[in-house]
Image (cartoon, rainbow, N blue to C red):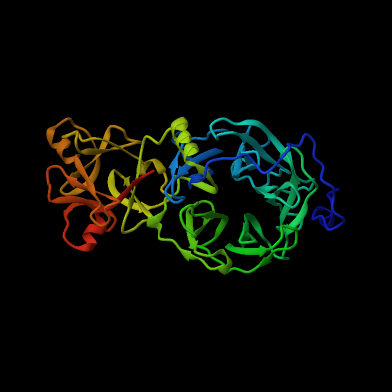
Length: 458
């Protein structure tokens, strides 16, 4: 028989911590100052086809907004127990300087699959992973979704928070305490305001206050408390959303007082939106322009952690950078250059098949000082202009094709940190979009310059 809800939520006397083989955790090992970020995520395309993978993916960033996927956006490690896949991964640095990775035990979208376990890995550098196991958090016939962890100094333990669904369908944020992520205490209700909540993310000890952000009614909302005691948090913030939004992730800028709040739209879209605030205590957020951030392709439900510059460099060196690029429109930053029926255009992310928006920027076919755009999924084809419109055509080996498919990259005409592309054989014309279709045209107005400006990223 299933445990009663009252027993499950820990409303009776507190259960003593049950752990074995605990690490001796002190103040933590000394380390260099954090100056970059790592993101963990899984991937899911809109059709659940190419670009879908339920292993642990990593990306790095120097500003927490523009991301470089590692390992060609392939998984760096994949679960070997349970449902043999993961969702909702999370990374934190433990008190001893090691990383721990937690994740939901679920592969795909079979929401009827039930696991009381979460996946756990340890890593010194996020290049190699050790100690993989599953940690059981409760005994109910329900899930242990979206696990995260924070250090509770008053208890000398890590608190693992996660989202189960009880037999009545009510969602709450639960907590178990552990010293080693090998065994844990019995669960307690960490935040159960009487309405459905899920996907908790914490910012601990910000000017003496602890903040919990969560999903409520398809929006992201914050609660706060001066303690880390279960049941002590009170909702206070203004809700934010972009359509149905989940998976809040709080990120502190390493160079200013700015905070970012990431949110993820529902399956099948999986679009990240970001809000910013200069002061967490206000509970108010302003949507960030999509020009300012770019998520890894097909990424879902991310976790973000600050790392050192040495770790950032090591991760790039070990895993490598992607061999292809995406190009984001300046004037429509939700849209990327892609081919559709072999016509060049800009369309909204996510794009399915996603490879239609992947390009190799190779030496120019007519002049190696320029570039040509080689399709990743049609590698014998390049973008070229014909009657000034861009098409994805097969290289016929003629000088005309080479010239039509060659462009010179210049500083962005609307923003010099971005890029524009001047035609090789029509040097007064640039690649631009018009009604979302790509052309080469003369550029004279501010609108022209914006339409002819793109960000080369991943």
